[in-house]
Length: 239
Image 1 (tube, rainbow, N blue to C red):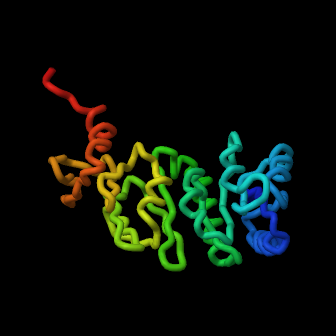
Image 2: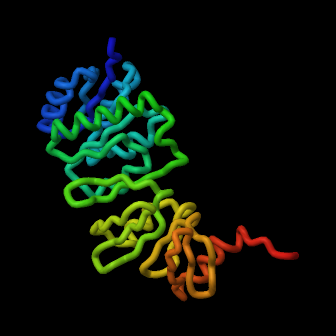
Image 3: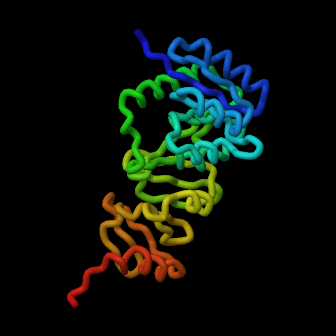
């Protein structure tokens, strides 16, 4: 017997709620246990029922979807559903199973439910020790593991995100991405470069050598901050 996934829809848009609920009922893995028009309504449902999956809008009055999930002590698995693509980067903080755009595509949604099923079978993946973020790649949203990133380079209106396996070119400013990333993992070393700290192999006066062999310049205005934050706390001298 297949164990059903108790599902709660949270969305302030009546039309979107109707579409999402109808598509949800088409999936035999899902048991729709509640439909809420706001985060406050959803709190009441969560207090009364066991919920395995939230299908949650992001831009809602009073409390948005990301804040709602962040405030839950033991949140269920989450699929974010939104009409606003700029939230793709911010939502990684709560480790959603997926990030879907409105109007909801049933095929894409059912693929997300398969991810939910896999996450239930392997609840330790992904963990908080393996952070990631989303960026837009054409019409899709790509999930990038922070530990796969080597560096990021500003290139006019594009951003080159260079990972161990490939390079992504989202239309995104380096400053916007930097403010969303964990400073313990990444550091700005130049007006055009952010690097992953653990990808640094060697440091000279004017440049960094990464574990991949890439050479990254150190900007004069970033040198002092880089040394204070990255080098000084870990430097072991002879005395």
